[in-house]
Image 1 (cartoon, rainbow, N blue to C red):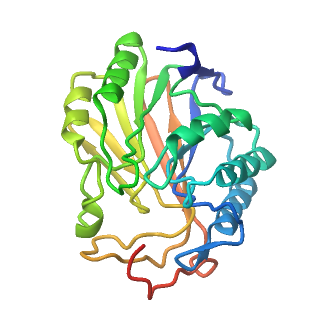
Image 2 (cartoon, rainbow, N blue to C red; image 1 turned 90 degrees about the vertical axis):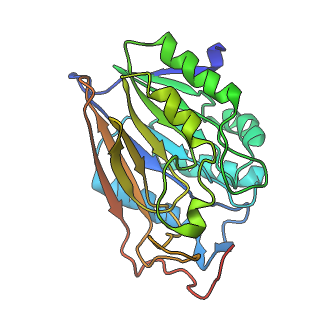
Length: 278
């Protein structure tokens, strides 16, 4: 494993517990005035940030779980970095989504002060950030190289509790149109992590809605987008009226996980419900 892949974050609390802010599916554009399905995504992210700042809930790092951009542009990533740096002192880590340009992110983000580390160690936990992007396709796929990297991190730090972070969902959300775009070879991921008792959480974005459940002793979580929301349990493409959201996750040295989701009021950002897809 390359040294650049590994980064350490020291928990602020003396007891070793720490909190993560998850932001996902920001769908930013080079032009911050551009809308996405009826919502200005730069403005919705800014309002999420403002709400996080008003909450004054302390956290140690930010995880951005993909689809940071909508237009694959270098400027969209610079816009994201500027919004993070203007508002937060905490380090930001990320995975690419299906609307991102992963290689471009790897170049741009370090140049504007955002780490490209893919193995982040915080106290008694490690976060392993995986690439499930298939270029120019909405569904996800985890390559043998990424699975080997995951295995390497788990074998290299058997003493640590582990969080697997990726963009695509490795579970059904029971929306027929959206489940077509899941992690297509999720069984390979699930089989691998089943051999490691200290894997406690698989965290994703992509589905623009909340999920939180336990399967085979491992917790699976997805979170609302900071932009548009997808209607749950929808056979065809559908937008939800609930507001943009964010999630905090607290981790304790004994392997415990607790979490809270917050949303903006729904009337602040209403999508164009006449849109039949994108």
